Length: 438
Image (tube, rainbow, N blue to C red; front, side, top):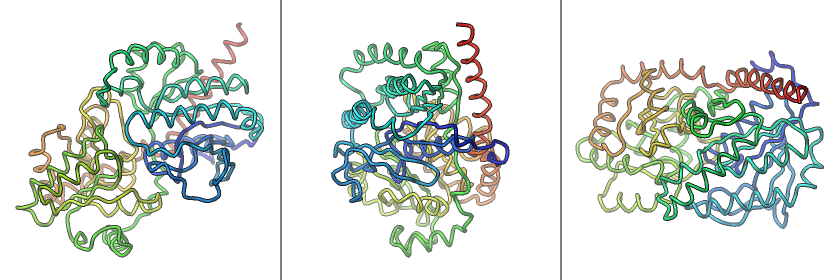
């Protein structure tokens, strides 16, 4: 383990900035937890600035936050500085943008109070879906005279192409100028994939080093339990319907949006519903596209398809373990070639074969390691055939499970922490040398 190699030091303090953090569901929350875990593994006492837990509904259910603008609490190894957000559902690009601006604004007006909480901050690590996180992270790093890492967890403004924004061309021009500035501020830049790192290096030419650091996964959070026992548990708790116990389950877990293209699975279920009675498709998650897809399900009377809302984090491992095959689905827009969703790593942790409805980096990992199949977005006929083929080929599925277990080793948090620690020490030394020269 990393902790046996790297000695923890309570003198070193890291400030992680993320809009989302557990117990909120979703990839952004889990990515932030994983980054905080890596920082803890390499010897930092971690403070996290995040929002009150309200994603995706915008409602804060816990009464301990009532009437507060800022709340400090302890969660595992981390000290959380939570800020109140507007009661807006995280739905649509505009609302998400407003929530993010709300978060940044509170970080500005609460600077004196926030900086009195942790002492001797040596590292500021800013991650958020929009590039303004670089500006607020830069400000905090300057005030604390600390090393600054900016993680562009989403490529903005490039990702706007998927939202078909009316003013996309204008926003894109302005956004790319702001993006170039944002990449000029940190001492080190982190991207979540090799393709994303290559994109930023080629198109923005930052003055500092750019590193690819996959979101990764902590396998210890995914207990080794049988598929049958997981199904019994989920059926017993009324999360899964009774009839799926002895079916071949194809699972998607995550956001249901235009980007994730879940309609592919809905139409594949429709293709399979009449001829194959022992295959079911389960979609776990929420999002702006869910109601529309449920209407399609109702119109076509697709009875082998089930929508289940977001579940608490402790239930997710059992949901994944209960599936035969899991799905990663992304828009075919070029910018998502560089995306590797958090759920991909969760699937690996459960050694599940993966169907990738995608291109780019995820497709490359799946195909080069033989851990599943890749189909094109919109090719519903082929998707249905792949699902049927996997159902009829248990030996192939078992082989993919074994391969998935091998691939997992490259993406464990302990392994990623070792690589990150080497890179971070190298970059800190570079900064010190530059300072001496100047």
